[in-house]
Amino acid sequence: MKRNMDSHVLSREAGRRRRVRLAVTYCALGIWAVMVLFPFYWMVLTSFKSYSAYNAEHIPVLFTLAPTLENYWQVFTAVPLGRYLLNTLIFAVITTGIMVAVSTLAAYGFARLEFRGKNLVFALFLSMMMIPSELVVITNFVTITNLDLRNSFTGLILPSITSVFYIYLLKESFEQVPDELYRAARVDGTSDLKYLWKVMIPICRPTIVTVTILKLIECWNSYVWPRLITDDQAYFLVSNGIQEIRENGFGRENIPAMMAAVVVISVPLILLFLAFRNKIMEGVSRGGIKG
Image 1: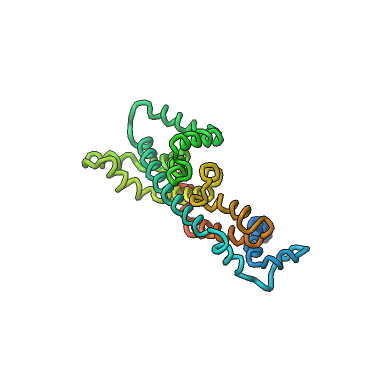
Image 2: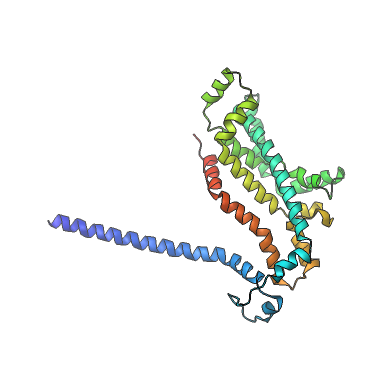
């Protein structure tokens, strides 16, 4: 009887400690969520404030009783933000499509084909990740300038159509597909391209979707290269277009209008991530597990 009572007391004590740990964990996560989301809340809130109301605030106000859409009207009428969005969409879609095709073929070659010096070539390929990005930008700039491709979509796209990291991620995913499937397909007379299209890509679709989404986000947020290679407003992307808006559009002092422009630019990426967040997590976890 005493043993049962002691066991019951220990069980209640363990349950109490578990509830305390959960409470502390959720409180910490809640505080962290507020810290992460507050800048987004402040950005959206400011975008709904009028210029006069914002300037009249000597102490920042965390809400507004008179929201306005005037700033969103301005971002599409006072400056060519629509053109910047279209340019970015063209750049992101074409670059991502070519990069995914190139990376998939390269990853398949390293994962499934056999050729002399494959491991050495792949090691040298990975070593390129240690080269500082500044050196690559300088080399690309000289090359694109010599080819007279500045202020063109070709000049914007060419340096971004391959990625060592994404090739590595796809290679790791391809290598998880059993070799028996490949040997059976080869016995049936299936070509490598057909095997890649019919077997490897469907099986590794989560990783490919992840690479596609991450590349789209990378292209959408690209700043240094577009800023360096284009000085013609007709080819500005949202990343360098927002700087043009700040300097020659609304002006540095019109913070609400700038926040509205940033909201418009950020919404597509947020929706894209929310729509495919499960695929991203699945693809990353699949690429990181071998065997």
